[in-house]
Image (cartoon, rainbow over all chains, first blue to last red; front, side):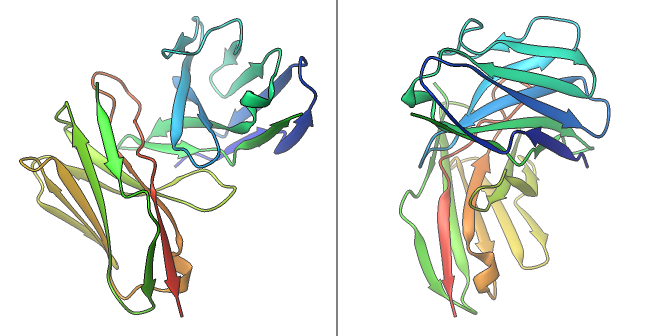
Length: 114
Length: 112
């Protein structure tokens, strides 16, 4: 299994500002995933971050709004840029691992944009 | 496009009964399907994986079935306890991807 930590755990931000969320894994992994979970909704994949290459974004998500860094095999950041109240959500970092390719999730970052 | 459907209404049952949650999928044929538990304010936690060639998988009080003809998976918790109260997510893989697509989940409430 993988142990994942995220910072910050929660934040309240003003519209128009940006927030960078950090994700740290206790083991080296090839791919890291960033999800968003809006209130009452399921998890939506934002992007897949591979070390040493550009992140791959899902439909509806763009790099200018959600830039991602992946400087090494245990760390990634997701920035939510030029925030609006619609960005209020829980942001989750995830990795796959083990023989069953299960997904392990961080505790999430709860973001409220005013 | 791929679609996953889980009962959106919460399931309320009494302690000791069996809870049964349903996951239906359309427009693709996943090779396996995973079930996760999510508690409020926390990330999902893996529970069970069932492959397309397995009819049933068990783990302690949990049982999952996978009917590829009906395109449906059922998740059962026997002898349910209040501590089982959580949201349960069904997650087959994205077709061709290394990650999963998640249903909206069904909230289970077990009352003493």
